[in-house]
Image 1 (spheres, rainbow, N blue to C red):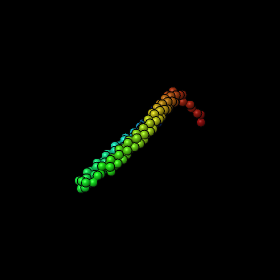
Image 2 (image 1 turned 90 degrees about the vertical axis):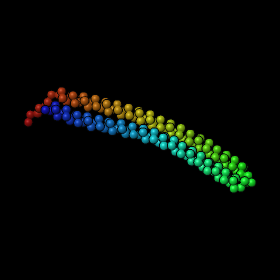
Image 3 (image 1 turned 180 degrees about the horizontal axis):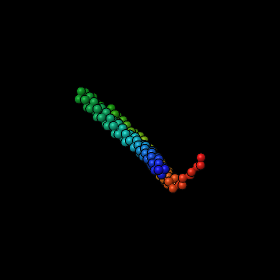
Image 4 (image 1 turned 90 degrees about the horizontal axis):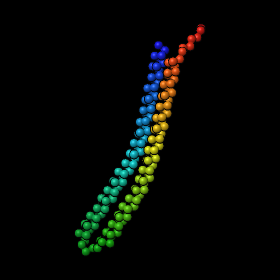
Length: 151
């Protein structure tokens, strides 16, 4: 009877420990997923910003085209070239900025990934060691001779 009670208590404890182990693993995995989501969202923001610049460039080009139709004798070429050069410089600066920022974020994300993996392995190993010790204590208690006390 005592062996059954001991076994039952230890199985309940083991189940709780395993649930905690699973929850912690999910937490570590969620951190990794969130870190990657940040990188992905920045890449999306980069694409959206690039599309915005290109749409603005097209709108300005259409504006100059309309001005040239309204005032065919006016020379908009120098202004058009200046504006086009400014857009080229803006695109280049944005690309350099985004490249640098994304490289830094991806490097940080790799560090987070390494940390998460190392931490996850360490925690997993700790839980495994604890469960082994837990099982050994259970077996020792099951094998122990009962002690009787005289009243």
